Image (cartoon, helix red, strand yellow):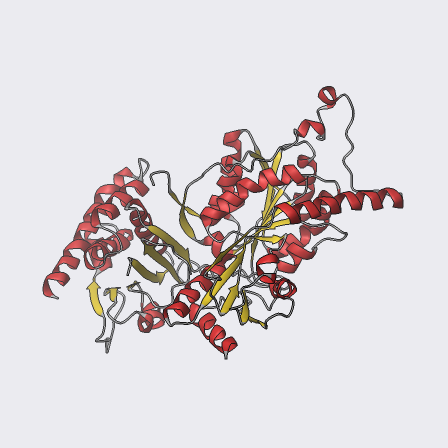
Length: 186
Length: 353
């Protein structure tokens, strides 16, 4: 079958979940794929839970609704409860171990833990936690390549936020290390 | 490939309008279409246009009425309850035979309803909304790429027919991001110069123009209605648009438009994978409605299933087209809920018995 990947990313509003999804879609588009990003846009607000879905395909993307994703990125506890049973068998869960505990985990999925907030705090800015997760995603999924994702982060930061490029790249690379470790052990 | 940009639906709609030459936008905020006015407020001044936030939807559509009379290209957007408020003005604009493009990013109703996607304004868009014997040319895009093309085309269509054109879409399409490429769409119609009818060109034209919707002499008003009806018949002849797939050997045909058609397309694929011969007809123009593909269904078709994010509105037009030759059934979700691929699959299997 042709390439078709669905992802859901979820967390608190303000954790950069929407942006994370957009970066994945943007990077995959730059690699020539068809992409779709859609936010949950109910009465969510900062501090509430938010999620977005991304589809990457080399064919047509018909239904924009993602029921059973291949990749699940979880940044807070309520989102884990809400989505983990919808992850496809054999799919990949990436979760932020600083804020999420996962007891009695499923044994039919790949589970990648990342202390995203710790990584970000060590670098001096908690707001790059989502970029650390993106680095993990680059290594443990085939949504988009690490190069395309890094280029997209750079493109989005632009000239205005160029001073933030270094810390974002460091967060991404720290995430990649976590991802590579997971791949090496798996 | 390199000209593709990742854009949110609402922003892509707005940019398409700007690239089609839109110069005036008078909006009033309402979710889920707020990125359209936001984008226009930034973008229109860059192209010498004017963005103005009206004090209400009623004011906004009447500002459009005035601006359209000058022959400049105008856009107004809103979501369901806001379109209800504009309906009087839309009827006036249709009566005065002025061009404008209206985007309705539908949300759940009735009343203030909710902010999540719905398709429950089909009747309002295609059968009236405002009072009087007028019609809107209604286009329902199925992707952001198609939406940009329809919007660019809509500006030509509205000038050609001098009748408002509505883009009927929903919160999913407004909020989602897809890759779009802005391509100039050529209709190939001979569009009359606005100087022939717009205000402000008396010198060029040698005579005044009178743009109005009031007509107290019943004979004159009847004649005016007949003139409008002639335009609507011409639209029915020239502007029917639809897409169909896998219909030729189908035992069940799913009819759906916009976002729902995309979900249905995935369901059709799944049904085919299971050996069930399913096909899809996706109306792209809702007025004029593509009755023909439904009246000329192949013999193999045993059932038509209409799927909407409403309690069943387009189903009435599909029934008209099918005219009782085969059973027509309906599956819908509403209030901001969307039918899932699995639900459509089940509904199709149930319909086939």
